[in-house]
Each structure stands twice: as structure tokens, then as C-alpha cells.
Length: 165
Image (cartoon, rainbow, N blue to C red; front, side):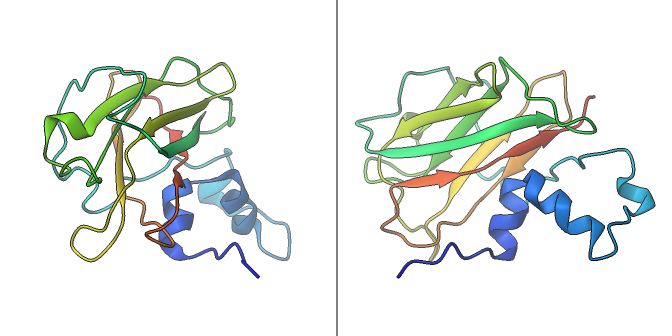
């Protein structure tokens, strides 16, 4: 039996609307800091490691077989953001996360979703993890470093809630 285990890293990586529901607690009252809507995703420690500004938009990275997915929403009203450039890189079966061939970017669709196929992510420094970045001028920069539940997983989801610049 496989349970969808929610840990702190996964919660922080997703920045999900589901997490916003936890803010209200049992009483249903929204804390003053969150009263204006969906809170922005904060950068994660280690997220910017081996970042390459301007990585090209690609159809896929390398030979593929692994999917990086997510949704990008605007802080406050939670509206999906189209045309947002998300950069992805990782240590994979085809290269280290510092190698140029291990980097690529994709754009979000009208519903705010993105997906980019890449080689299988493998453990680096003891953990199988990906790196993602939003780094254009319209919103505040966010770097994420989500850790996979299992090194054998063939996908990793990372959601962004972006704060206008």
C-alpha cells in the first residue's frame, strides 16, 4: 500500500493551495498575515546551487524518461500564470547538476501548469532532488530544491506561488 506522505520539504516545495487551507486551522479564521489570500512560495536553501542564468527553453532535457511538473499561481488571488519561464536542472543518469546539458527551461500553459521531460534524477549528496527556478523580472525570484520521496520515482512535482515584483 502506498500512502501520499506529506513531509515538510514536500509542503514547502509545492507551496500548494492545500497548504493555504492549513493556515486557517480548525476555527476557520485566517491569520492577519494571510488575510489577503494565497501566500508566495519562498526560496529554499540550496535551491540556487549550480544555477545557470538564461538556460534555454527546450522540448526536453537529454533522453528523457523522468517528468518535472507543477503549477504556477499568482500570490494573493491564486490566478494561474501563463507564459512563466521555469528553469529545471538536476543530477541525472546523463549528467551532474552543474553540467550545461543538465539544464533547461519551459513555459507554463494557460492553466498555469508546466512539465518538462528529463533523464532520471539520481541521488547527489545523499538525496535524489531537483532544482527549479523562476527568475524573470515580473515576479520575485524563487529557487526550489524539492527532495524525491524515493530515488526510484519517475516524476517530481513542484508548485510555485509567485509574488509580483
